Image (cartoon, rainbow, N blue to C red):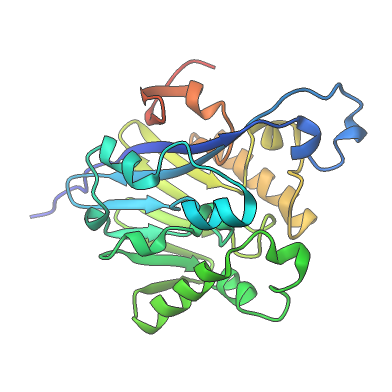
Length: 267
């Protein structure tokens, strides 16, 4: 007897935020000849859950190392955020690491039962000869890279070559530009198809106005990625930006740090 896989609840959990200006966040913002205005940066990770499994997309930065090395603070620890929606670390079956930047891969060790996905190109770059260059290295915590390498030895690491099914109703696709192996996650949500863009799209304005974020690995691929996200949007997917404060107002709020991505407000 065939059973249809239950659709997923989907949540964005905001664990930190910081103020800023548009000129900080958009590459060569002065070229647009527009006034500089305030634009904050929110830090999220994402939870996908049905009656069969719980999947995380990213896991935030490590509280102590981020404070010591970058003076970055958390508003709420990721484990506390998970507790608010009745998820324990041991409940997590799988963790997608969209890319290796410290604010997305800092808490992998918190999830003892999870297998972990990462793109082949992402793993190769951050264990390769150019990862230690200053312009690259400041974005990544070397402890997180060591953790991923350890998981590979433990056979808990799934290396994604282009695209892969994570679970029934969840898949990942490489969408490079921000980093060599940036992954986006496709989800069969309760209200339709969702795309968790992570840092393939920090702000909706990048996609809507073709404006690259200030940091990227490859500018041409960044523009291509915006085009692919627009195509997915036009085909009916709801795109979830990776750092945009607008996420907290576009979707139904569960609490001050969490929104339900399957319930969208009018925009």
